[in-house]
Amino acid sequence: MEQKDLVEKDFVAFPDVAADVLNALLFDGEILISATELLPAPTETLYYGDNGKRLRNQYEDLAKYEMRGGQIRAMYLFANQTLPDSRMILRKAGYLGGAYREQYEGKISCTCPVIELILYWGKGRWHGCRSISQLFSKHDLPLKLKDYIDNIHLHVWEMRHLPQEVRERFNSDMRIVLDYLAEGNSYRSDRRVIHKGSLIRMLKVLSGDCDIEDIEKQLDTMNIREEDEITVCELFDQYERKGRNEGIRQGRNEGLRQGRNEGLRQGRNEGLQEGLREGIGRGISRGIQVLIMTCRDMKLGFQETAERVKNGFQLDDTELRKNMELYWPEERHENAEKV
Image (cartoon, rainbow, N blue to C red):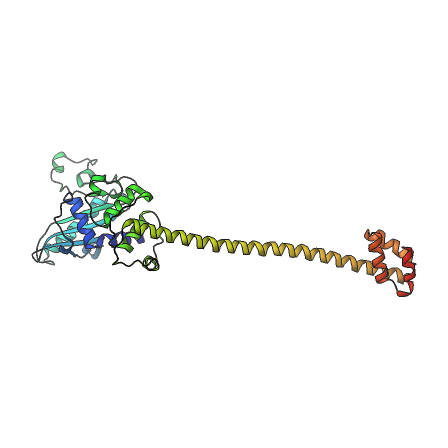
């Protein structure tokens, strides 16, 4: 989850993407903020917790100042969210309170509005509270008291479920992300890609693929540089071709490995069987030799010995003759013809 958050934060942090998000979502697509007017703002605010005894900090995902005439006109907070959070309105109150307190304490030179945008990337719909009044709606409070509750609102955009007319307001790489989420793997476009590595990482993590290491190295192997002009179709086609070639290579290596292991297994089994056969053969030969030598020591005749060997080891006449000739003394070979 942390890796996914970092990828989403990195993508939205590009000034052209951040300005595009603001124009599309806050101003209905009208270009009122340019990338050059956005500057990074601190994402950390401090507050005293534990009944005011301990200094604590809190971090927003991303913060931008909108500059006009050398002055801060507005501060924008961006929160990327994957899961619905029914109490997130309280967290927003903390972020806004921290940002306004820094203005109160003079940590920035002017006062300005602070606006937070919740970019919700989850597949399900957002069912969390969208305002303080909604959070307390089921509390047993006097009606008059409710009139005095500061009703902070949570501005949530469900990025996977934006209608087409809203997606069409975007002009940056964010448009590619939104259309891809809406149309799936069949999505193709002649739109030019600006932030190639970050775009691929964003699409991969939103698709559930966290293997995002060495994206720039992979682009380099495809001879694609960050400054090159390339369309979505061209980028996707080359990336898919690389994935296909990589799959073929991995499949070939896996096939070779499995084939080698299977060959070793079969060879081992065949070796065991051959060894077993050879061992049995040697054992029988040794048994025949011992029996013949024993019969000799017992002064048994050639014919009687031959009968015992034949019956004891179930030999045919050819095998019997061969073994008797092998282990019977030379001077008795004349009897072999009688076997």
